[in-house]
Figure 1 (cartoon, rainbow, N blue to C red):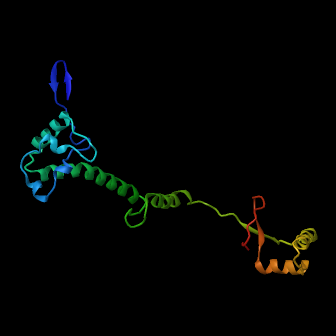
Figure 2 (cartoon, one colour; figure 1 turned 120 degrees about the vertical axis):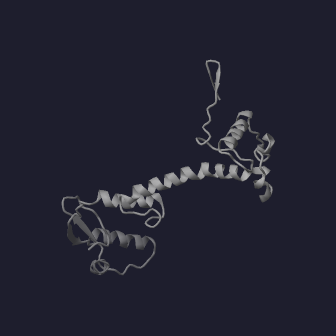
Figure 3 (cartoon, rainbow, N blue to C red; figure 1 turned 45 degrees about the vertical axis):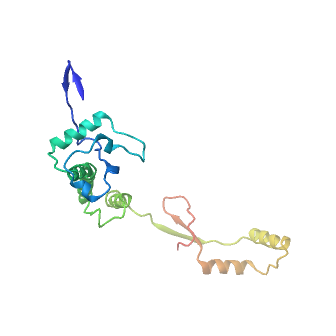
Length: 193
């Protein structure tokens, strides 16, 4: 309620915030058919240990009268619509947004980030040019590296029966090479050929 210049001006923004409903008062479906506003105490919550204010109860009475409610069921419908209607409006706006990208948010994506990723691929990478691959020579073991491996095996008391040719043949079979992209510094990419 708002007081201006000594006059009482009732401002009811009943649809602008969370509604009030007597959750704990409803013990059976038949209660929804009651034709009177529940008492103020019916809106108390033992679970949360709270009571509604006199102003909130006046708001409930205003809503009951304004929307010409005939039963508690009407109050429940009003209460649920305060939650559902804004949600539906948000979903409709979101659907319209994704329709601009030929995406149906309920069919083309599991999540909003997934849909956003599809939009990104549609808009950001249209003119992307992939760098040219310039194959490099296969990696070769050096004698110094091989002597290091031999030394490790001696210390670990393991037998080392490999030669440089044997190691280089294994590398060629595995096709582990480095790829150099034109215009980009050397980029090791094991497995690329």
